[in-house]
Length: 189
Ligand SMILES: CC(C)(COP(=O)(O)OP(=O)(O)OC[C@H]1O[C@@H](n2cnc3c(N)ncnc32)[C@H](O)[C@@H]1OP(=O)(O)O)[C@@H](O)C(=O)NCCC(=O)NCCS
Image (cartoon, rainbow, N blue to C red; front, side, top):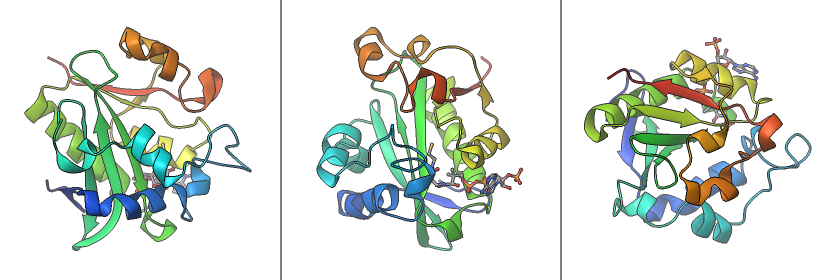
């Protein structure tokens, strides 16, 4: 997949360790997890990452209807990761997660470009009409980037979008009901 500034490539199992490190063991970790700013969102171990967040199919493509991960590349260099997940949501919906590997690759408009590119692909190729993204409401840089990519904050609860089976597990969002910014983008029919 090609964006204006970046390209997206399906991530593979061999990429999973480094993608974990970019998320939970890098200089961008403090923007979304762990103390001092995010004590409510624990820093996951690699095992937790593999079992609770990113099962094999994100890296093999075995269940595109459940989710898939992609490496973000700029001039052929991997600079971050983005995924969509749909296993826990109502039909025709997907949730996005994104992180860059370091600060040098933040604030360059890559986030905006990547999110637009993957959103359009999901709409055109997978009939996704509703996209969801749920950062902390204190992650101003993320919120600005997602707004630029066409997402708007909603007062609807996370449970509005989750299937009944997942409401107990994910209904409060990663940062609690008051601390999670629920942002959505609709594609008109
Ligand atoms: C969140 C993230 C993916 C956004 O991607 P990005 O490429 O950095 O974002 P963009 O360049 O598209 O847009 C960022 C916007 O925030 C602004 N911004 C940049 N740094 C900022 C900062 N420290 N504080 C507030 N706003 C900031 C930029 O100016 C830009 O807005 P503008 O174009 O209106 O000026 C990326 O910053 C990142 O990986 N951060 C660390 C991990 C993370 O927080 N992931 C999200 C978890 S939900």
